Structures are given as structure tokens and as C-alpha cells.
Image (cartoon, rainbow, N blue to C red):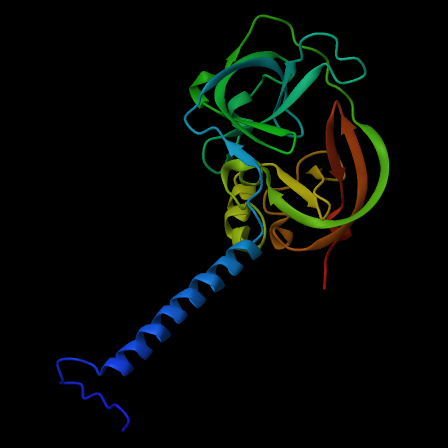
Length: 247
């Protein structure tokens, strides 16, 4: 005779109870196995860092255009490399650092801030009250050098989140945040499918109007432009007409 369980009975029949236990245990193991497969199938987070709360002092020469960059002397003989490390500068929150350095282009300055870095690219989130112009003379602006025309595919991201403040800092899930950051003056970076990073500038080698790139941010796009070099910094000079969504 088959066992039959009545809901108001104090106990389930022995064989039926044993069967239910096996089913529940098997479903539990299956759930764990599926979760492990999904976890291992996810792409790992990028190796990016935001040294939140670790405020450091910095001193160097300010290069204000097209984006504020601090040129910090590299110690010793650097050979054929640039004698400066280039630190991109931003303000706290979703704001660029332009207003913090009015009238200081080409001058030596001291600042305090927190480091943000990823894949050889470094940024400083500047403490607004820490900026001081120093008596030491600066240097003449380093000119752009053309490396030729390129045709590449990738994505426009905001440099602050991408370099370490957010992780992941790219893709459609980050689009709204990236749009607000770039609209606030955070320098835009074009990241190629191969992972190369280039700061974006307009056809006059100046920053784009802050909302000009909005429809292309965090979208897979293709572009043609001129690759520029300044020190060891890489820039892409483009026309908006050369930006195309990938289908």
C-alpha cells in the first residue's frame, strides 16, 4: 500500500519523509552548483584603485589645457622617457578641476589629494582648499605631436569612475553616472576594445562642450581621428561627425 500523508497528521510516513529529505538535499546541491557556475562565469573586476581617505601632498607643474594635469618630476635618469609623470586632476564628486587652477597654467603648484589609478593611468582627486601656487618658475607648454590617423572601436567613459572610483566603471549599467560625470567636467576617455586609453579632444585640440558626447557615452562606437602624444600622454583628436554607433 502506498504511503499517504495527511496535512494535519503529526508526522509524515517514514518512506515519504526520507524521499522528501533526499529531494530537498539534491535541490540544495543543485542550487549551490548553479550559483558557482554563474559566479565563475562572470568577468572579474578590473584592477583599479581609489585611495579613499589617504590624502597625500603633491608638487609639480600645472598643465591646464586641454585638461588639468600635474607634471611631477621623475627622479634620476629617465633616459628616453618623459622626465615627468602626468597625473590627471579632478575635483571631488562629479566635477572637473578647471576652476581650482584659474591663472596657474604653466606654474609650479602644490596640492593635496587622493590617488586613483588603473593600467598605468593615474589621477588625483584634489582637495579644493589645498591648492597653492609656488614661487618656483614653471616651464613652457609641451606641444602635441601627431602619431597619425587611426580607426578604432570601443567606448567613451568618464575617466574618474573608470580609473578606480567605480568598479565596473564602464558599460550601459554605468551610463547615467558617466554622463553626469562628463557633464560636470570630468575628462572623457576613449577605451578601445583592446583596452587602450586615450583622452578625447575636439578638432581644435580643446575639450568638447560638456554635453556634446552625451549620446555616445557608454555605447559601443567606432571612430576615426588623429592620435596625439604630449609627453607620455595619449590623446584622440576627433570630429563628432566621425563617431558612429556600432550596430
